[in-house]
Length: 418
Image 1 (cartoon, rainbow, N blue to C red):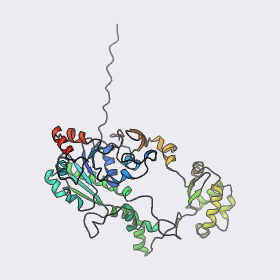
Image 2: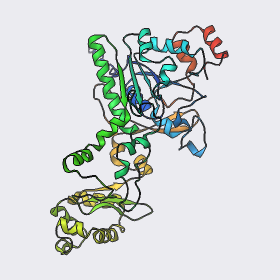
Image 3: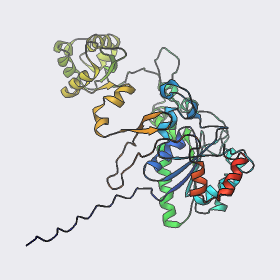
Image 4: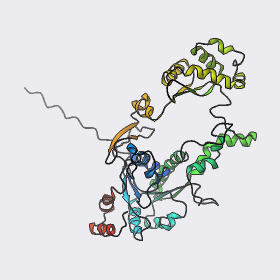
């Protein structure tokens, strides 16, 4: 007798993407806006990036270029912020561009822009105009200092905002002029506020059916990262000064040279116990009670001499090896990784599959970054490389916006899609 056929196993349905039904018309450029829409795209939103060869996204013409060959589609800077998006080439200065803008607004749930305040109004992208087309739309604007106020229309980059926020003043060495962190650091702060505000607006619309306008000042977002300095000034009338790598509450506290070219390990000792442990790892337990270094106050007083002693020891070790030895012993330490270390050697990033390689039509295989969190029920996906400029123009117009072929051909001939 044949056994009964086993009941076929039910195939588990693929989890729905978090923003699977969200449609985004993205007029933003550079970093804050594109980073914001990357969050949406990686979790399933359909993001149409509107850009033009007449005024390309600034990051398209910024290094690094793949194989050091410049090209509008070869920038790693642009690529890493714009995966999973569609590119529509549209000359916003063309008299007929507003026809396409109206179609995009009618289609979209969310639209973003990052122009200097006033530009969007000239282009027909003011919130007053677009909500006449679609009352429930959510519009997000990001600018240097917000849409209102005496300095709202001051153009510039995040590097200037770092100076305004006081961060550049405290960055660098005490015997030199102020420095600044790498790149326009405000862009890498502001997009996190942007995503939170957009999610809040989407929840509000789901409950009420009403859209709204979000005005993000990158300057004010950056001020939050100066809050401890501001509080110290308010309470203690003390202005933070440049200290290099040093810290008022720790010694040693800095980056120390290791074996190899430009290899470093950071060490931060806050307590006497950590100091005693460091001395033991160094093979110099007697140093812990040395009259120059026995307490934090003494170590701060003799910090230059202390740093030289430690540097003479750390230079003998590989930085990763040194970090592991110190961390195991209980001394706070960190290997200063370069870009190659992050992509090829970092065991934590490799374990969490932070980087993923995707093929690009001009650059070949390139690394893309996943977002720094994982949602168990609605995972992210990196499925598509960053688009070449205008790569999806016909697809967006004819398939997504339902434009008749003859209308698309007419506008193409008129030079609208550039």
